[in-house]
Length: 176
Figure 1: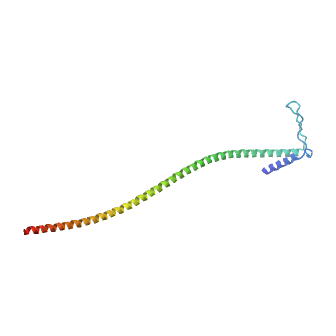
Figure 2: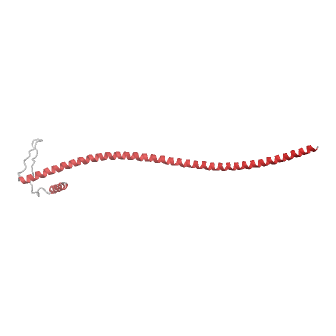
Figure 3: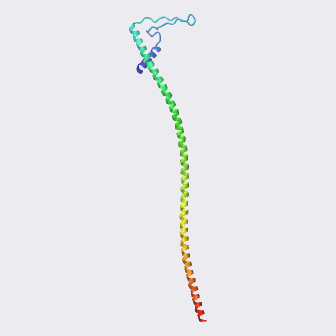
């Protein structure tokens, strides 16, 4: 249908380009200059054979049907375009909201990552301090054991010394 319509349009353009003297067709109606203000006289078209009139009418009906079909398609396409534009605006808004949400979540994620890094460093510091304190505690316990042992040895030596002194004093007091 579209090819027929285009062909007819091209033929009409070609006919319009021809000079009126070159045209073999007679005009359908002649319009005399206006005579009574807004009323004009129109003469009837010259008689033509019925076959060409029927063909012209068929072409006219076909062209009107094609025009109606094209008009319906145009209206449908316009409605589709409007709905697609509306959907595109909505999608653009949703995309902008989603982008803003992604940016916000990215910032939160970055903050959480920094917070986790800080907490990880803090945990490492606490663990290092715990290891250091454990070593110090072990050293202090070893020192304590050493001092207890040393103290016991000193007490034992002192007790032995005092025992010997007591024994000596006892021995001296018996002889006197």
